[in-house]
Amino acid sequence: MVVLIGYVPQREDAVVLPYDCRLDVALGLRALAAADEDGLIAALWAERVELQRNGLAERRRIGRLSPRARGGIVAGVAIIVIGVAVGLLVANALRDEKVVVKVSP
Image: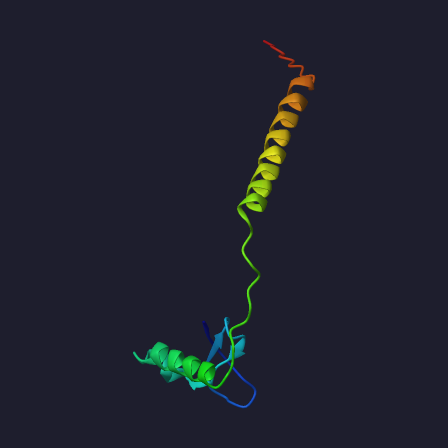
């Protein structure tokens, strides 16, 4: 749940703009004074529960990765990191550096 304070075209004063990310729906607008009240979160949660009772379902999430897929991703990232580190070491070793020191009285 995200609670923002902002302005809407129909009102001159700032309002509380709650949004439920799991249900993917904006909850009811409230006056800015509601942000100072202790029961704001409880009221928003009650509104969310009421929406669920009325048949609004949570947004489906993409399934979890299998352990084998997760291991493949980790191994791929490790290979890339090690390859970049070795490449930097080789590039640094092949670089020709000359230092010229001039001493004058």
